[in-house]
Image (tube, rainbow, N blue to C red; front, side, top):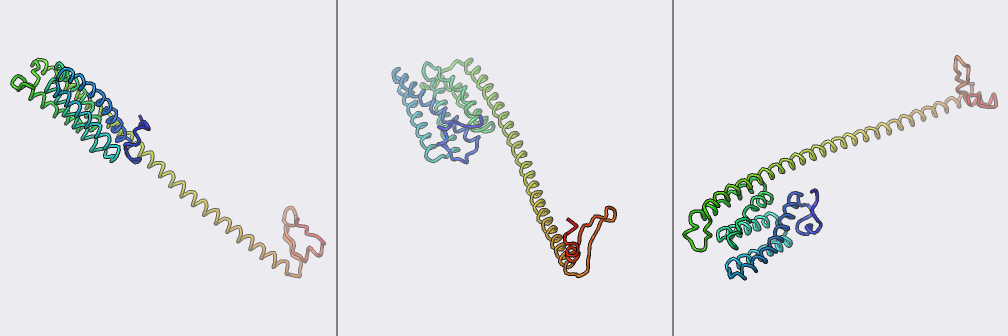
Length: 269
């Protein structure tokens, strides 16, 4: 993916890096999908008289909409991504702690490592993924003691934690590998640019040298022509006959004006 869709171009500056453009595109796409699902789930929750969950879903959706509007106006990419991910984190924690509809909301937790690692990078995304284990541990200890906290089966929580860590590890490795490939590609591009710059500079120097040689050669030819003209003028001004002939062929190569007048023509032509 070397480009992003034109519809996203209004959310960042023209000189924004390609990597940031990709992250913004993913953030916008996930936010829009999340907003749609949040309104759907809030409606279902309210129908089931779970006003706390319904209200939380609506608040999260409205905040995400505001986050996208802020990105469109200010184009603060880092802030928008961090803020948006913070909202997603709080929503996921809320869904896991309360259980959501029929205590099935915990399945959304598995998507968090993928989102965090892509939006924040492998290092910070991996850290955020590990921090999201804390609510899981807290729920495991207090789930049966607090009324609004979902009381998950201990075996389910153990298997969920293991599966979540596996997904988190794979997300980290995948993003780390992608970062390495992008860095290598960037280094190759920079190396090629350096080679092109060096070759361009070399060609420029060669062209300048060639231009100088041409100028010098023209100057030398002009000097020779001037010398020949001066010599011809001197030879023509002498009253005696002067000529130059080839020793082997006896062909006349030059004759002065006096000799030309004597013969009535220039025999050197």
